[in-house]
Amino acid sequence: MKLLEEVQLKLVTSLQGKDLLTLLDYTSEEVQSLVELATQLKVITKAGKCPALLEGKTLGMIFEKHSTRTRISFEVGMNQLGGKGMYMHARDLQIGRGESIYDTAHVLSGYLDGIMIRANSHEMVKELAEHANIPVINGLTDIYHPCQALADLETIAENKGDLKGLKIAYVGDGNNVAHSLVVGAAHVGAHIVVATPPGYECDATIMAKAQAIAEANGSTVTTTHDPVAAATDADVIYADVWTSMGQEEEAAKRLEDFKDYQINDALVAHAKPDYMFLHCLPAHREEEVATSVIDGPNSYIFEQAENRLHAQKAVLASVLA
Ligand code: CP
Ligand code: NVA
Image (cartoon, rainbow, N blue to C red; front, side, top):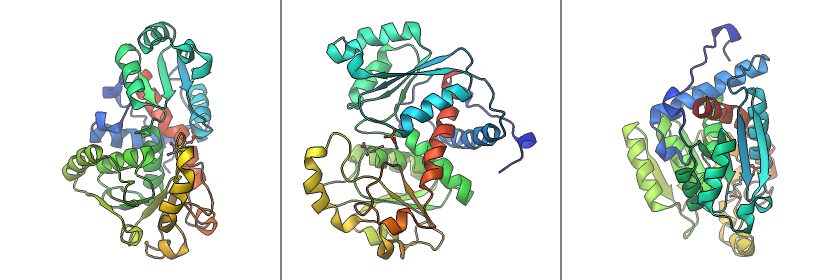
């Protein structure tokens, strides 16, 4: 990492006042710049010199689902930037008793400088963003998890250098984390292959959009049902849970449907020897990933979790400043 004196913060000024609902709404240059800014903010934060770019600003943080990383990293990130993060569970707000998104968006816009929301429905977050006149940041919906993808790209870049031309293999469910990782990889010119069981593929429209972005950046987006094909020569192997929040009643069926998609020693033997194992967490050891892999020498999961803090500071500093 560069010495502090060499770090010149480059905020992504084109994002000022913008929402972050999906990385599809950002240009490749903006995504690449956010990843670089995340590392810069990490360096200066560790040197005890994170600037108070958001002094006096308040981020409302609304959660409809559980969270450890998102909740804490957003709140700490706001503190480090001199502002404040305010946690709210949706069930405690009037929204939980049926107050409209329209009214809520207008009211919150009068108090807050930005909203971070983790919601069941991406459509609800879109509606909130449409009516709020402050930036809305997606902290996970049923379709996307863009802040996770930014932290993932930061983690890979910090350990592999140039992201262009790397091979990222996502093995598991074609879910919110997969969608955002695919779009993020496309923006930075990394090749990404998604291996899912039949019936659990990523959304075709999102994949087509990501493919177009990847093509412009000289990389590829591909899909397979063969985890070995995906893992072969991979620089990064990525896992998420087989059963996401809200799908609990499908858990038994999913355990059966995904059983050949575990990331274990036999699978990672096909990857490059210096491959990185990533997982957004929370993880289920011995389900989607073998303990020997997630706790092994190629696992970067805790660095990846820490990078949520810095990647989100890059977003907050750019959209709220
Ligand atoms: N990866 C992630 O978003 O973690 P949390 O659910 O703990 O926020
Ligand atoms: N796909 C998982 C990610 C959790 C961070 C879920 O939605 O539950």
